[in-house]
Image (cartoon, rainbow, N blue to C red; front, side):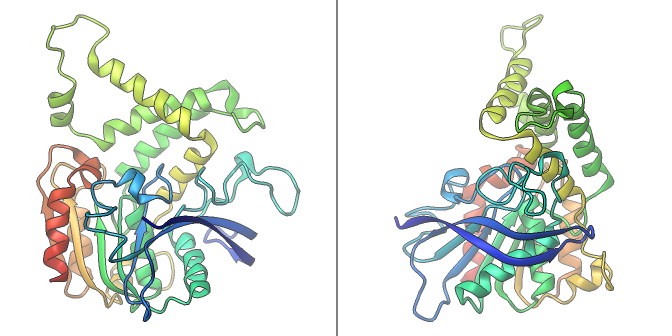
Length: 338
């Protein structure tokens, strides 16, 4: 499998939706497969909050030889979103103006800002049309934003477990996670390690929103009828420790703000009007048990994207169902492109 990690250097000044600016920044991206002679086999995959630019790593059921997104058939691109810890511009990088690391002063990108930066990468690669764009959760937010900016860019559009603007419910979850990080005494330190103990707790909070009552009932039941030191407690601690070993609290904090900032209707047009501009053949997918991005949010997308089809995957895995239910998802995608 031909898989390559690249770095794209964005040259010039980008004014963010917040009004802040960032100049001459980097974006890491992974490509898999070979682009066809007429460049009609491009699949652009958008990753969720703490994933990386290698979808065969975090979406192994969907991406790889013999999978739906087979690099023998498609030229697959995935960019590590700005703010992330895995190679793109992030809080640990130096501010071009001061020469010092951004740290807590990082100018976080909205999903729309991310889409605008991806547009420059696309143009540099000479790609006129993307055969399919697909992404779940925060990845779906970026996908929808880009499709609104460039309504004719995608032939097929597949937003999964995502929304047109982040809900007060979702913002409350993210705010609670940031409070966990802020409660860590090290958060006020100007250090790359600031907030790492708080990150473990934040991840525990997040996990509850990613899963479902039935998920824990199936996987964490105390068959020994434990009085304390339950499986759920052990699992939450394990997941917090696991993320802290591979991610950074500063990136996590800023990416949660990026997710909260998502709103398609921040400009001249309302969100509904932005969605109505999209020309792609669109399949919107929801997860039946998703508590964080409930199906009502996908119904809104499908209602306002012209000709969009809505499918809901029955799953007990909550929001994370989009990462787990690869067989059901593959079947839906086969029906879309046949």
